[in-house]
Length: 122
Image (cartoon, rainbow, N blue to C red; front, side, top):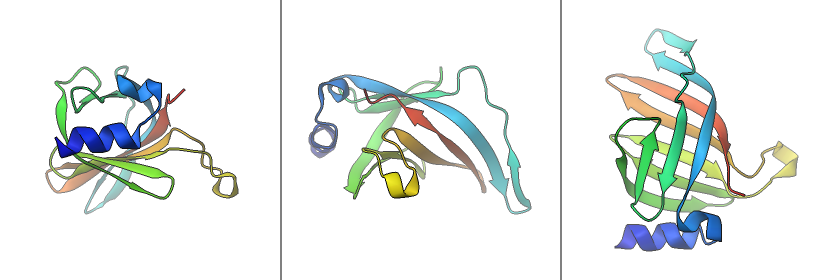
């Protein structure tokens, strides 16, 4: 119950009442030996469903949102093993961050998949 209340408070506009989509624009795969650019797949998007408290990575089965929090202009959503997505909730002109910009980190064995892109918060 705490999670759904936190999500509704963090995303109080009408758009967030149902959910929103985020498109991955860049992806990297990192392991002990370094990082390499990763291929963007045709279904490389995220759908965050506020009502169901889930996040869907492309056409994969939805994952439960474990926790949400806010720090400054960013909203953090934790899901999966040690995964999170960090979304800008407003523009920040000095750093050129725009509302909807996101960074995602997902664990994979002893490596990490990093993604950047844009969420449609309008």
